[in-house]
Length: 590
Image (cartoon, rainbow, N blue to C red; front, side):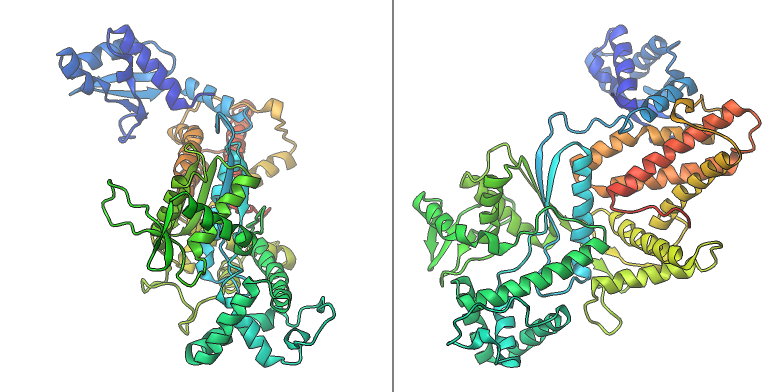
């Protein structure tokens, strides 16, 4: 199904050709002056030089060819040579009914479905999720859902940080806290306990204490480095503790991600690819792709077209240790062997831009991926407080993500305190859904690469460009539809038909809806959930104006009333689809 703009463009191109001009001059776009027209074409301006004619003469001739076309209420030439196009209500209604009958409202998606890996989350084992993990989780989940909606086979991987120095720090801190544990008895021969020697609460205290201690106690820091090396060398005792850390951590992380409505198909970590690293580094050296530099192993990735210096990618330190880049390259090898992706999408802090440039160039230079494989990086900005600095707790500490969710849920609950008829349990569940929508929409409505100010008061507002406002719009529409049914009305799928819009507010709402396929295509191509947010707000705002100016249930003409309700059903269904693409849930009542 072609988009509305494509259909109009086809007609304008045919008119250019009929007037004796290059049809490619008939490019059409949504008008930047909606007070004058709905769509516009500036092709006559471009054709003036080619055809040695004044642009308004060309525009006049094309407008004459469009005269009488049922798609247009008005097609006029405006000096110095613009074509201003206004759709006929009947043509728009036809388009809306066609969209309403399509499962994806006219969105085509990928012509050839692709296998896509979305690498997001990036949590570290043994550490609680904090506000710094919000953007990766929320943006990554939305991009994954957008890719799935496009028809792709998508795998989301949390890519846990589970193999670094934090493991050695925990092992040695645990040794000093509980020296009698069998893991620290060199004479212990039997199988190690199946039960972890700590709870998640204890584990979350152990790491920060160990980290702080290592900065002051050089001997302890050396022990932690040694324990890390032993773990990475396969020491049974260290491995047993590590497995306990992972089991306890994963369970807690899954619980917290689930509460955010963020889900991963894979729970792999850096540890999963460690066996691949020695052979990979040797292969890079054997093929002359990597070389030694001051005892380290590096890959030169600078290109002649670079405008800034791109240093070599370091794949092995002089002491033989691997780095993040090494792990990411080995992960690509693992994914190529198991998932065969056509597209990789990494969602991470924009400050990691150089890292991903180095990794991507190394992967291509080494032939780890096919030339046509897409390697994409979505770098996001910082969530700041009102002071313009990274968001912190009131005492200046890093806020846990679950506390952030609780705070915005509390803000929503306060605003809903006056709601009538909601039982306590439903109120609590609704406040949670609306709070998460406030949090996610507040993040996703900003372009990912930009920093933004986290403002709980504004984000939780039921008015303006916010998540609660979007949800309230959907709930309000459902309330209207339910009331109609409770009064004996029926609106089965076979009865739905959107009539030609009579009022401007009705037509403007229809025009908003007609842009859905193009919005979705742009959001997918640009990996830009904020495009969907913008569409949702514009549609909700157009609905609000329609609702204010049109008596829907009080309309005496039953056919016209069903037309209004059919239009509302399409608004509801589109907005609900969009909320799901953002990882938001719609409550029954608010």
